[in-house]
Image (cartoon, rainbow over all chains, first blue to last red; front, side):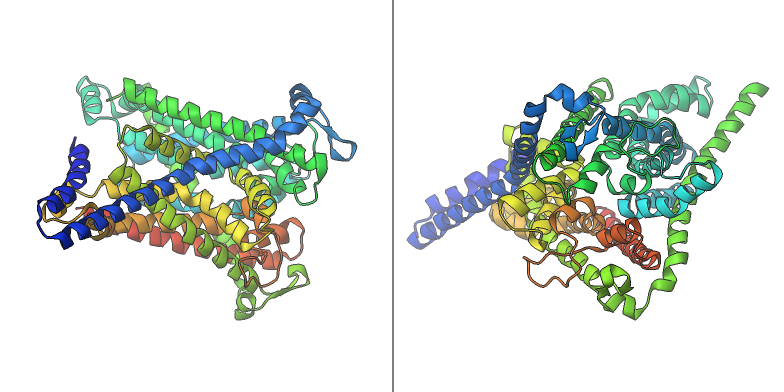
Length: 318
Length: 278
């Protein structure tokens, strides 16, 4: 309501001042001012339009570059063919789609439980000072660039796997560990915020009925924060699927479907960054087609999040 | 009763373990890179240009490349982002289709992975606009990437400026533009600065998008049309091609120091933000 008041006043006030005035100079001055204000508003609207323009251009240019190849070889072949061999013009992305989903799923498998437990800890259990320190650390983890995670994975996690578990270390497992660490901050921060936003009355009601703090967490708080927690998992998943540098450095990048978590694997994003430097012709188009599939997948995930958040607001506290 | 007690005790241990794991991961990463990287750092490492593909010499050109690219990205993204936020909060009807579209697209932009920005920057700036691998191509790509961060933080801080400030200013006869310039932007400044710092952090660490748009030339970038290699790209090349692990550690160490400084500044300005709102 307040917003409406503030938007109405400025529209009418300069006009009424200048029309009441008998001095011509002021009228002129006033109308020049109105012109200037209108111009500024137009410029600001143009700024706002940049986001829309960017999305349109990104969609347009990636689709225009990627679609011809998919029309050429058929969507079915592109998605489900087992072989990726650019020198023979064979472009099947199934092994790397499988690789992307596999590494992401393995990362979620450990990062989701750890993240949610940490989020509950921060919001409900930890003494405020401890919670403050850990939140700062989570923020710092979120700020470390992916290439540093990849480097750490390459020099610490990969040799560790090679020495203690076998294989050459560059593996699904290494990717899952590194990716999991990278999405922990996303899962923890968003889940923590949604847990902290559960109304105090819910907790008090549950405790008053004789439930213990832990029972309240399990039966009342987590269910009430459900939509935020799901949002955090989906966003974490989007981040994992789209992650490039960390994954390319630790997974070995061979284009076969992995047989165990110690086998090397190649993801869709890795293929783009590894081959873009020298690809040309159909090969380059195929890389754009991979980007297009990735783009569609991520935008779909984002839409799911938007819907989930809206649904949560509807059945939540309004 | 006893069973319930053991269960709660186990849960309690799990809670503390999860926190310990986070602390452990952070200390392991920063500690390991610092211990291994600190010996590589010297004045020569920072101020000398790399030679023989990075095998010898320092990393000065990549430091300049990083700062240059980040600066170009911010110069473009900050006015656009703050302008967008002012428009959305002060001019647009909140229910309007345009405002809805702007919010939706900037949220979508925030979720797009950097490799997609890299592909777009390559085909649009490098090829279509014929800018080549350059500071300008890379900077504009980065600008689009950090735009949502700046829009969101500016929007939040502008909308938290009390309505009375606006009403008082308008009642005193100030025009809407004067109110925005003299009242709203100064009050929202800490939030805007926080957004700029966060965007800097993202731009400094970005690799995938930069490698496809600014290239990986080791020369010193002078003009906007020069190609450049950033520290992150340099770290990737050194480590992946096994050129020099010692220099890779040194580069990673410098990147982590930059990130810690940026993180500290962001916290500082957030704290000032919460003070100014009180």
